[in-house]
Length: 210
Image (cartoon, rainbow, N blue to C red; front, side, top):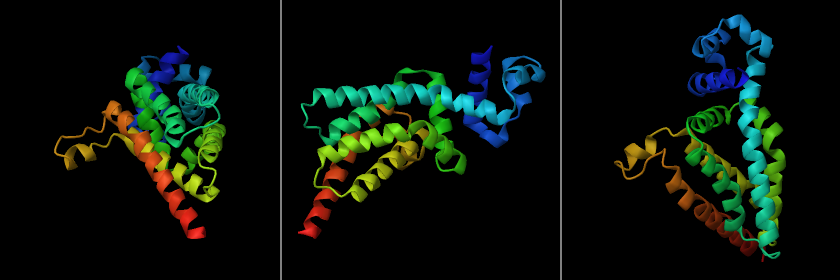
């Protein structure tokens, strides 16, 4: 029953957000009386937190493993693109292969990412992962200032969140050449594109110091 409740809540939250959903809405989608939800969850915020945590912990652990495996296999010579592929592609694979539930989580994550609530949740579930990536990027770009590494990560996560939002804007702008739900196309391009940006901004900063 818990998984049914989480699935229903995830779907509704992904469309209407935390404040646009009631426990009665969730109960109705599950097909139970709303009082049953109070047996499993104290209130709506606890339910929302559990919805987010369920898949956040999966993608966090898979990406940590991918980064560990990448660093172990690179012979002490990590590349920016290699690190970003471990970080980004592992996440994108979940949305490509994971079905409706992961699609809903993608929308939910993108929706809350730029809110105080989202900042709180991302801090809790992803800080360790992000700092692991940053550490590898620093070793890949030893001459790069830390400030440029962190700005680079900021741009990466912004691009990822816009991708997960699947607004359809790129579909219209491109006249159908691109689809905002084409995660395979994103996976093919994003890490390579972002890596070039990291390398260029670090080169420019190094040149300005010399």
